[in-house]
Length: 84
Image (tube, rainbow, N blue to C red):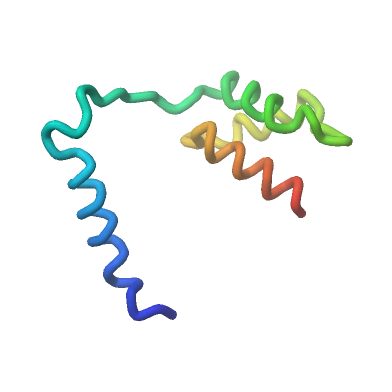
């Protein structure tokens, strides 16, 4: 294990705080997490180039099983599945 591991959260906080200081950005935008139907669409987009893409039923089941996943999380899931 790295000796830097305890420092990582505080370093991330410092970087995050610096990025949010006054004058850095005009606005902050909040994008909510996608619902089940949107997650199924995201999975469809990220698997459409596969030689054997998952069925619509499997995509719906995965979408239902992944509440709280962002589009980036779903892309990472698809990437990991493609490499497995």
